Image (cartoon, rainbow, N blue to C red; front, side, top):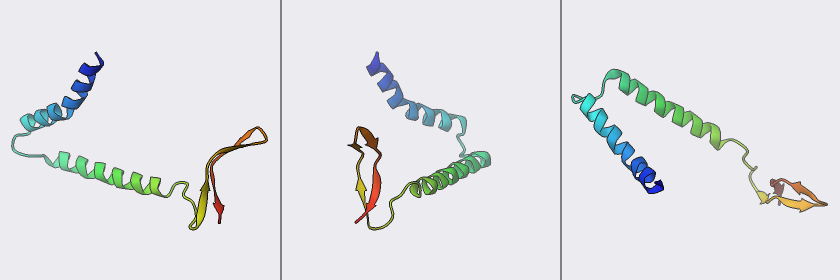
Length: 80
C-alpha cells in the first residue's frame, strides 16, 4: 500500500501539469501570472526572514548541547 501512495505522490505533479495544460491550452492567464509572481514574492520574503533568524555572530564557535550538573544546556555560540 505504501508503494502505491509513493507512486501516486510521484505522479501527482505530472497529472497537475497535464490538467493545467488541458485547462489553459492558449497559455497562462493574467490571474495565473499574478499568482505566480505573488508566490515568488512570498518565497523570497520567507527565505530572507529565515536566513537572519538565530545566526551566530562572526567569529563565534558553536557549542553543541551538553549536560552540566544533570541539566541540559542548549547549544549556543561562544566567543573564541
